[in-house]
View 1: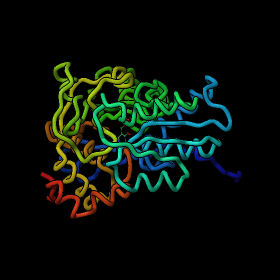
View 2 (view 1 turned 90 degrees about the vertical axis):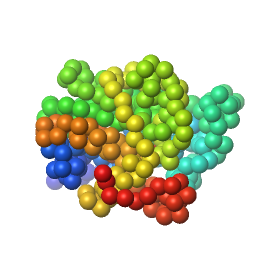
View 3 (view 1 turned 90 degrees about the horizontal axis):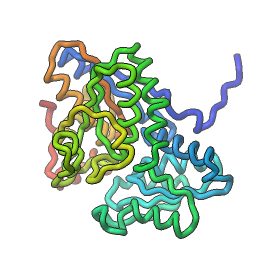
View 4 (view 1 turned 30 degrees about the vertical axis):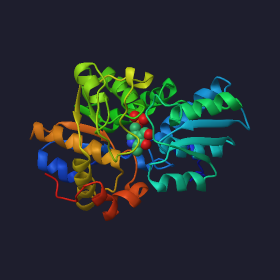
Length: 328
Ligand SMILES: Cc1ncc(COP(=O)(O)O)c(C=O)c1O
């Protein structure tokens, strides 16, 4: 026996790859979800946080007592507050003010300095991205800049990609997932395509995001909005440019909600909105090619409890015109 005491830092990654039993059985393919909600901060973004802190320390941009600032939909902020907190950094986050309240509460419990900003287009200087940049410039803080920082996607290339490859014993047929910064899809697609050039990579895009038309037609166009959080974007980022994507499909909020409840009730998987959207995309692909035993991998980015005030709140669903219906 040996003493096995770890750190939060060392607990990032090595998440299980789960089989979504109901969808695999129904489609005759293997629908697999990387359980990123099992990271110490409860989301895939712990990986981005660790990669960006590590790179900043190596470059001398972060030193003991330093402050990290980031614009975030919440999860990157949680990852930074958790891992940065463990390493003695102060964390300041700018966040749009329409995210699930559970994320603000978690960040505040961690002692992060949370600055809520209005939901505005990227061109507006009040946008959370610009607000973070301006704070960094004004105070000399380290700006993580997850959208443009290659250390985000590179950490997925180094960890998430190889984990999936090994967990699948070297056979992955399709990789599908939504993009926020694209760190996850860029790092994992690059790694897995190197291993299997025939791998098919599909972007799953919510309403209001321009990435679907970017992949399909080479131009950003999107209208409407989505209740999903952390995904969908109307501009090209460095991490997206590095992603190796072959095709794209769209998933509506209604489809996402149907999958969210299906997974909870049929597979005991309570996942967040982006994860439910990802699995719906995987389901669409699995249905298009029934009975082929294809290994279709996606990401279970975070846990459903993080959105309880929205997704498990009938009043919220009704207000958005969303219905809990059986999966079609
Ligand atoms: C819940 C959730 N899902 C998905 C993503 C998107 O991941 P990525 O930024 O690696 O594209 C994010 C990013 O913030 C997120 O918070």
